[in-house]
Image (cartoon, rainbow, N blue to C red; front, side, top):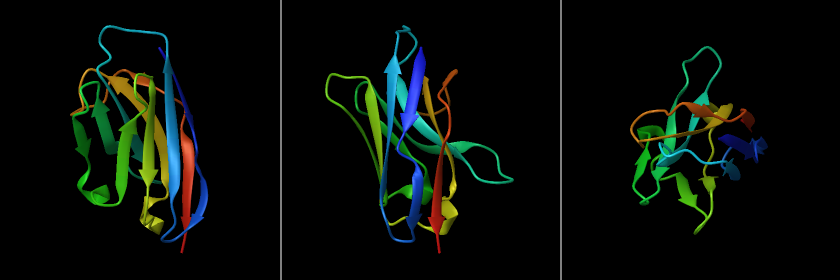
Length: 117
């Protein structure tokens, strides 16, 4: 399984960005795709994850601002990030696994999101 992430960039506080993650290949244990982020000096943590049955798990710090969705019938997952804050600045990683409640074993390359104050 390969995960291709795209969509990072530089945005001002209050702005929006959309990240995309496309999965190629197949594995029977993949039932969820999500986004994790790593801020400077911090551990990588969950942002949002969505299952093949459209169950969703959001981290508290993005609830009400970020929306995760899946392309119907496809293997692309989007992360719509709204009302961005400087503390959202991080490298965002796409992840695939068997649950929305923890990271799976497949990781994409990171994409940098920078929010200027």
